Amino acid sequence: MNRKHKILVAAGSAVALAAAMGCASTPSAADLDQLAGSMVKAAFRTEGIAQVERVTAIDETLQACNAADVAGKPLDPAVAKRIEEANLKTIRWPKDGKFLGDWRQGETIAQSGRGLTWTDTAGTANGGNCYNCHQISKEEISFGTIGPSLYNYGKLRGVADPASEAARPIVEYTWGKIWNAKAYNACSNMPRSGHMGNLTEQQIQHIMALLLDPQSPVNR
Image (cartoon, rainbow, N blue to C red; front, side):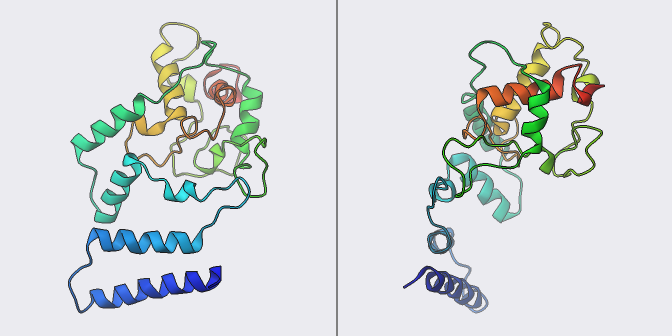
């Protein structure tokens, strides 16, 4: 059975299940999980650096958020708090103690959506793809709106000197949010860029500078 045939079989199973739902009891969560698993195995494969485990490896955070999404209701507050606390523990702070890098390189990373595809090599530098969800600089006219606007991010938060003690809470929050957004919002749509290894520590430092450096076009 080739891959195309497997996908068609899995899709046929989904149609059969949907039809059965019209004249029988609602399928259990286990039945739906099994069906979803079979469709994933049929539709995805490992090729190059793109490993199928990216789709199949689901941790407690994703399991809970996916279940809440399917049920069409918010995550239980107690569960959300437990998930956020667990993700907060995964945040790794900069080894050299420096939170900001070069905002110019940060802009390049924010603009780039390259990396992590089967055509890339293991040494390919990944992009942050930040503009896909956020407005950042005033000059950029093409940006997504899934996330809030980040234009004037540091300026609006009164960060005149990112190295000052007064700015420390905002600086640490921003780092943590980029590293693992689910530490602050259990079911955030924002990728866990540092935690999942999508961006390096140095790349995050550069994006931090783009957001917080007073000389960055974001804050001027």
